[in-house]
Image (cartoon, rainbow, N blue to C red; front, side, top):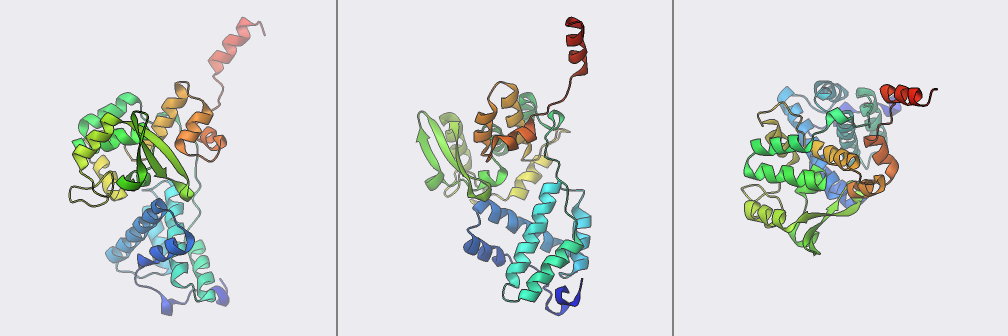
Length: 293
């Protein structure tokens, strides 16, 4: 790193201010789910600094990612890295040299984590396993699990569903407008029965799902609730999306239909994630024998 791109430690921050994400959202039309994710990432980094008594330096960033790299998937690690980058660049938006130095600092303090996109069948839940998780959960968590399974929505989409703006009645079902990655919108449906059960249980005033104290759910809170279930089954919030997609494809729904249901921008994304073209050698050899090849 040359002198022009060296990070000036004299202006180093003790912590990242969450309001920087608000500024980013206002200036760049950041979606609500992205904003929530960035807040969570910033909070997590600040907690690490508090626990270790460090300030924001190349060394603290490096040690932070070394500490968490076995706890999260590559895509999540890359997002956390990008959240820090965007927040710190926002902090120094009027200082071009420092903004450039921030990029170099984070680039040299962390690695780019390789994402394995394919979701293998042994990494997802069967409908019976989803029911098993529901049987272990509280009534509120059970409904969240059921909703995630039915809609295949992301956890950030679930916690940002607004009662006044995102709920509509559709031909005997309840339609729900979701805002996904890059502000991409799509509608999903649930039964009237499930919707009324959710309303009776959560009593939300602003959001469809609210905590007992009437606040918006935090994604980390739901993750921890799932982890506390007494089972060896995988149970992170995103697994229900992967499991639902795999289940629908295996049961005859078209690739195009499932891709639209998930809100993917192309069927190629869906195919790369969930369709695994590999040769079944026993089947191949049996076919050879049948045709005397």
